[in-house]
Length: 112
Image 1 (cartoon, helix red, strand yellow):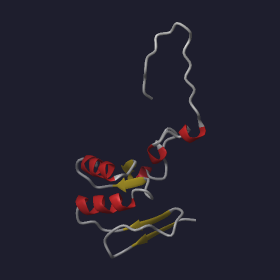
Image 2 (cartoon, helix red, strand yellow):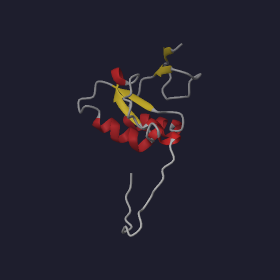
Image 3 (cartoon, one colour):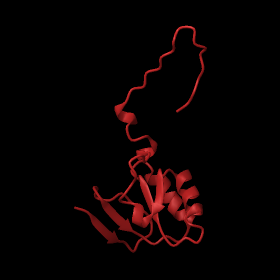
Image 4 (cartoon, helix red, strand yellow):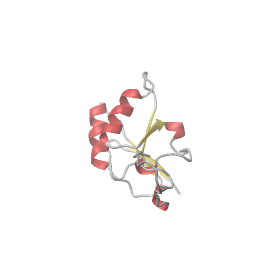
């Protein structure tokens, strides 16, 4: 199951869990950013629609507040396979990286 419900009171709060969407009216990006900042440890995706700038202002604000995925509403339930779930690569938790250097190789550093 899943549930979608509307609330008259502004502000976000954690839901009862599992695929629940609470729809609220926001009066400013600052209000939304404050709510996202407060819920950043429970929130993965912010869906949006109707922005004349394509959502750029919202994306910048939500990213700074802690959201790790900001997409148009129609793409919320369909993240790509390479999506950085909770800001991390999809297989990162399942992998352990091993670094190997051959003898005589000049040491160099790289970031991934």
